[in-house]
Image (cartoon, rainbow, N blue to C red; front, side, top):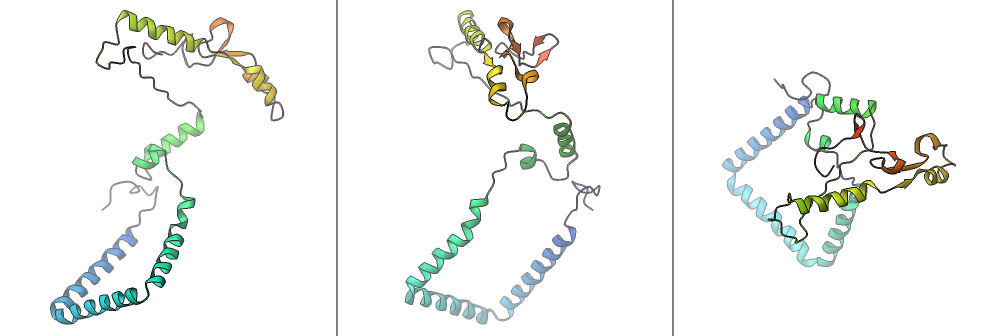
Length: 203
């Protein structure tokens, strides 16, 4: 009856395992419930006896219990050294087997890219967040910063020189580079036609 991810057969859905777990839990719940109602005094006595044994052992052998607990804690948490944090939103929030994951992987394989978004938050010089950022003076200030950033130059020839033992990157990285290609440099920006792509007044 499942119609979600995996229903098309692209990914296996653990139907059998879920059914087995459900049946086992149901049987255990029924057995415990019947035992509790039929022999409630016996069950209570057994539980009390168990806790008494555990408490007496801990009270008479505190050093052993503390040592064993410490060793077991270290052993169990040893796997944390191999833990890897997942930062890919598609793996964190999208169901496995989803068609969108296949499309995303196709895009990555077909058009690989190393781009990463960068966000700039502009505040007025007085530091007050409630002030108007779109005044003429503030816009001129942001334009000055934008111009300086666009004028940053990267020496591609030095990159070619330091990487010559790996491969010859002269045709790809040789020369002077800047983001917008100002001052006769080569441009690194993504372009809409002949101009760098701009989505806001900041770039």
